[in-house]
Amino acid sequence: MDNIVIVGAGQGGLQAAISLRQDGFTGRITLIGGEEGLPYQRPPLSKAYLKTGDAGALRLRPASFFAKAGIDLIGGLWVDHIDRNAQTVMAGDRVFPYDHLILATGTRNLRPPIPGLDRALDLRTLQDASRLRAALDRPKRCAVIGGGFIGLEFAAVAAGLGHDVTIAEAAPRLMARAVSPAMSERFHALHRDLGTTLHLNAPVTDVTEDGITLQDGSAIGADVVLLAAGVRPNTHLAKVAGLPVENGIVVDAFLLTNDPAISALGDCAVFPNPNTGQPVRLESVQAATDHARLISRRITGKSRDPYAAVPWFWSDQADAKLQIAGLAAPDDEALAGADGTIWRFAGDRLSAVETVNNAKTHMQARKRLAGVPIDRAALFGTGFDISAV
Amino acid sequence: MVKVTYVAADGTETIVDADEGSTVMQTALDNSVDGIVGECGGAMMCATCHCYVDDAWSDKTGPRQDGEDDMLECAADAVKPSSRLSCQIKLTDALDGLVVHLPQDQV
Ligand SMILES: Cc1cc2nc3c(=O)[nH]c(=O)nc-3n(C[C@H](O)[C@H](O)[C@H](O)COP(=O)(O)OP(=O)(O)OC[C@H]3O[C@@H](n4cnc5c(N)ncnc54)[C@H](O)[C@@H]3O)c2cc1C
Image (cartoon, rainbow over all chains, first blue to last red):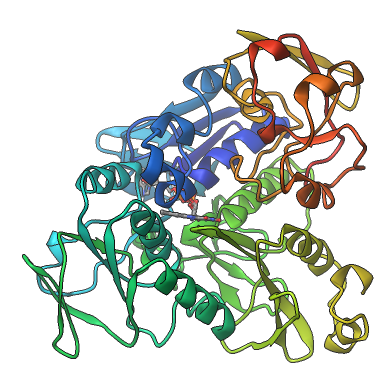
């Protein structure tokens, strides 16, 4: 294999290029990204960057790295077509041949059909974040559409900077897809204590010059409106190329699409959950980088193991560091421990552990979840001391 | 410029010129020093930038930061008294010549 092309120069695409070199791949690596500039990390965009505005701190590697590692990074170029028969990708009039293609195209902000929504700002890219930061140059009224991680992280920073913040969430609770009801409650209280107004069961029906309108007709005045209502995977390229797409580019346990010359990873990929076999798509640094490492090991022949990494995730909101180890379905049972840790169960199997400001339990959970399934009774028996199971 | 020497688990040394104000982790990543992963980007959310500070330097790098102990507890390789998260070691003039040893595994 001589030629590997990676489409998407974000967290996962870059990691794939790095891992391929570390694993000894000596052929050509072409890393193509639509965004201008060097690959950067997104997590600080809704956290530290909003406060500091330090874009330099976001870049994952300096320009010199790419020359040294022999990675052809092409920024500011959008790939618009894959020709699977010829094994080439095309970007305008440029053609890149590949022996193996890695799709790492990530997601884009979901833009629901709400009238006036073009007035709302996004928070996905560095460009979005810098626009948002500029809009917060003096005390403003901010309305956030969506009470998920990104909306809440933004809200915490904005409230901390002295802005007046309102959150409108369509679901009955915050972060409903990702955490237990008890954890939603805890963060609801946290934001309320920061002085933020929260509306649940409150789909936004209109964005106007004066702010937003909720389904019940109430109008909320706002100078800045942030849209943080989730994302859509970038699957267009794959779909047009005839690859199976279902809420993401469908891959198997080896992160291969149904074309053996094409892999997909990270936010844009739907892969079988190692525990349940059910298709799942995760939006996390962990998934993007662990996927990338597996693809690299597979290509270089270092390992033939299927993907089995334990998911983990974090979110910083004010002084609360939320960490999640494992992966729970929304209706997995939740038991609260004395220290505030939430233990999630799929039947009798421990599926996830949610902690706040408790890195120790989080790290222990990550370690133990990588081993044999942890049974509810066993955990009970230790008084919920996961290190003792 | 601050000189930093990374000693890999197999004994290979890599000497790099680091920018003052950068960290031991970021400098390793910037200079393709394998053996530091730095998954979370320095947010103290993982333990994949684990290093052992050389005995001659441990006084100058100072004690672990708040929270480092908890993360280190689950580092992939053995944790020793000299273990640090390299994202938490900021490079200053005083650390010119710093030597750190890298573990076999980070993930
Ligand atoms: C504000 C914010 C905060 C976050 N906070 C956290 C957090 O705290 N913890 C956490 O684990 N995760 C967090 N995430 C999620 C994390 O950043 C993503 O899961 C991760 O970046 C996914 O990596 P990826 O490589 O799949 O996609 P991305 O990093 O999004 O990269 C995809 C890249 O592909 C490019 N691309 C798409 N189509 C094309 C094309 N046709 N041609 C060329 N290039 C193309 C895009 O421009 C993009 O740059 C956050 C995300 C955001 C936006």
